[in-house]
Image 1 (cartoon, one colour):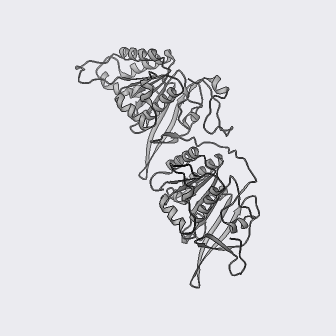
Image 2 (cartoon, one colour):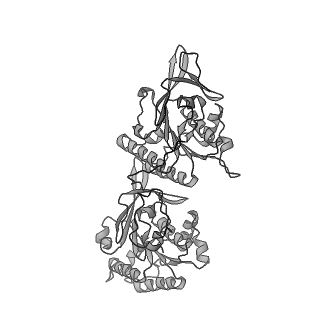
Image 3 (cartoon, rainbow, N blue to C red):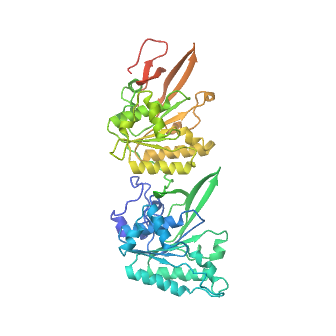
Length: 502
């Protein structure tokens, strides 16, 4: 259990603690869940010594969150008990194993217990009901045996059928459960399914539960997203929005997306783009570290080659690069770039040894915007790169339209800036766009380069213009370039014999 004294002495580290304006005050003793982002939303964790109600429909991850809460407590030395009214103990242990939570080892070591409380319908006679006192006595015995500090009651609504025709309803008995938990001061998560008439049916959300967390699934244009909302919490503050969250084999990831102020440090350090002629157009040294740069251009203008050149130069400097490709697989990307003299393979992070480059294909058609956002941010947190490549960013924006698309792209770039990385994005412009960007994010871009192609006199010319580059003097001419087996070669102003350094 984590106390207020612990948090004030610096023993607790919340996500995004680098932004001191975003780190909220912890109002009361809390028990951390160990779920990235969720503890931040909950001001450090769940109310310690009190019951928390976790409600949601099938597939919203109630059991996953509960297992994460329980196993995090076990990892920090807080024994725990799980009472299941739905799935078997063996199934729960397997779920935990898939998520990388070693619940089985904790049980073998005597730090955890799973109680199988599922009613045996075959042994119950007509009109017979369960005796809640016996259930609570069994749970209390397990708590006392191992000195449990945490308790999970999974799918307690599974008992509802046992109270049909009884004098006391499940609603009445649930009140007893909450009172019983408070007396024992065990931090508890109670899972229950979502129902349309929830309050009338159970009567516990507004009056009994100290903390209520609602989980739901939404499907828009055949894409599903999970959302979390803190309905209430007594004795402490919490994030008030709906927060998207991700569940996969790596566990659960929640990202609070409500920061209103961005704190970033500025530096005069410059980074080469990997193309000397382009560096020359940017004052001879490249771009500033920590900025957001974007290459916009039509198909065939070499946007990915410019991004790959930047990535390759960073790896050669000894910097870590996370390359997120939204249209090409990793093998396809490496093959295509080898044709222009850029070999990314020697820099790859492999099982045999740590490289400087991590390639992560994320096809834009696979998931919704919120899930892409979560996956990108989690990848950044995991790999801690100095450079992030988003290629092409426009592939994600096309999944939404209008203001929603712009808002989500701006949110992504803002969060990457908070992480302190240098971001390089590419944008595909259609032939009918007239060279105009459709993303609407120029205010968030520090260095913007437009690439275009011209077909005249039976010849294809590729041209480059530096539209903006904050904080530095830039060339005011249009530069011609070619894509050769040596990469991008800059030629200088079209129609002249003058050549820029290549």
